[in-house]
Amino acid sequence: MAIKQYSLKADGARKLAPGFKVREFRCRDGSDVVMIDESLVMLLQCIREHFGKAVTITSGYRTGTHNKSVGGAKSSQHLLGRAADIQVAGVSVEDVAAYAESLLPGWGGVGRYPVKVGRTKGWVHVDTRAKKSRWTM
Ligand SMILES: [Zn+2]
Image (tube, rainbow, N blue to C red; front, side):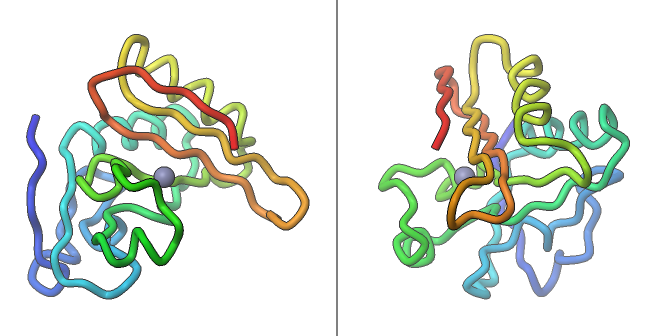
């Protein structure tokens, strides 16, 4: 598995898996470069198939500038194309996170961002780092 580089302009509509196109992973600052880890795509496709519901990526690849502007961690996996923040239609943050954890028994990152005051929609962060990491924010 490798981290691949794409161009939003040239490859945006390209399908990486049945449920995911390159443009869904784009940096929200409009950058043309999109870095995407193949194992991340597989992970998301498993989640898509397990729940049978649309998986929306609210944040995928991030450039350094964009990561700073959204207050991302300095060594965020989003900078490497290894992370995605996702929402699954009609499925709770807990259920998505628990299933993601079952796919990543001894590795990868899973972060829970449940609904709270000032946050109307929750999400789950998943990433393909080698070392296991879990958190709730
Ligand atoms: Zn994230």
